[in-house]
Image (cartoon, rainbow, N blue to C red; front, side, top):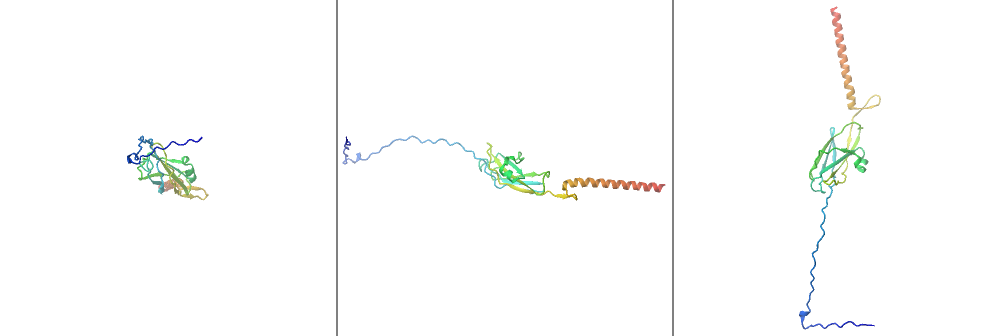
Length: 202
């Protein structure tokens, strides 16, 4: 069956006011969900430097912020190792440098710390590597910094038997020996003088 459409009512073209119409529908307020605050970790330290001054290693770097590059970090974690691979691939297992008394400064400040190295166990031309990272107040850490390197020169003396003795050990051996020899010579001289006096008196 075919059903025709209903006839369209005629348009009154003689009355233009009826041709202008508009439809307005009020819309509700658009409310976006509240965005939670994001805490960023400190930014990465990229300019760690290390130099040897006498018996110390002096390290310097630019302070990161607590929230990326804003504020001041909460603390630093610095580690050192004779193995570049350990420091790079297993940072937490490297030797910890004590920085508990160091208070981080605001972003952009220069940080500096001095470390006294013991010569015990060090071999000639030993390379020591350092790296550091910063933490914020909620214990988020930055990425590990660039790695700084210093070369430790331990002066060694080779004795005739071919054994390598450190300069410090050599001094500890030589000085007491010289003192004993000096005391023995003085004692021998005094005894010799006493014998001469006894022979003259006789």
